[in-house]
Image 1 (cartoon, helix red, strand yellow):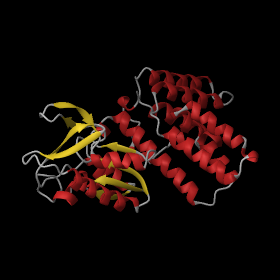
Image 2 (image 1 turned 180 degrees about the vertical axis):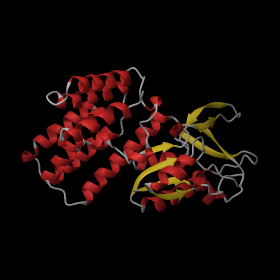
Image 3 (image 1 turned 90 degrees about the horizontal axis):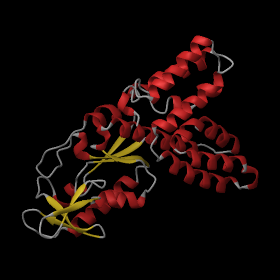
Length: 315
């Protein structure tokens, strides 16, 4: 998986003051599971160190102004952003991580100023805006928001779900493979977006009436929309209860009580998601419930990331 990342988050000294903003989760943890493609349009445009810049105007008409010189450098940053866009476009990206609050890379977090120097709100940086326009369904996030464990888990789920589809499309797709893909991702999709999950099911169920290439295009569009949604505690609880129903004829009284209590405690935010998920995985193995064991929802990303081990990873 290739992920484009603001270079300063990887420790590259490309900030305006010649420093960096190395992020431990990105540089030390996520780097174990992805190849990074660094970028910094500001360094391309103005070098390092350089004058700091700000966004001025409105969301529809943003200008980039030097903080000391008051020089309009919009065109320079725009050209550098297009160079960066072209460079990362060749990498078959599976996601992008931006530096928050940056005039080039902020995702809705860059300060937007009036001509008199007063702040009037926040906006996308020039480069982030171009990326979002070019790849509307590509997983994207800022490092600042990834400090929130709920947003972090959802983003990582998004990355790996997106990558799963890319790998599927890179294989030799068939109706049988699509049915398996959809079946394996049933509960993950339900946890993300019940309505789109049902629409995807109808597409697959009606495959005899749709040419394969058309079916794949329609499935891809809906799938990408679904996995971009944030899982919620309520939807996740519904999924857990649905999965638990597959064991109604297997579990003894104590096991049923343990699973029920784990789901209730998760719903009350008394235990993290890993507790009921761990029981489901245990029972799936014990009772040879292959359908449940195969579900991507149980392990949507590498176990070592341990993103479901905190109470605040659900919301």
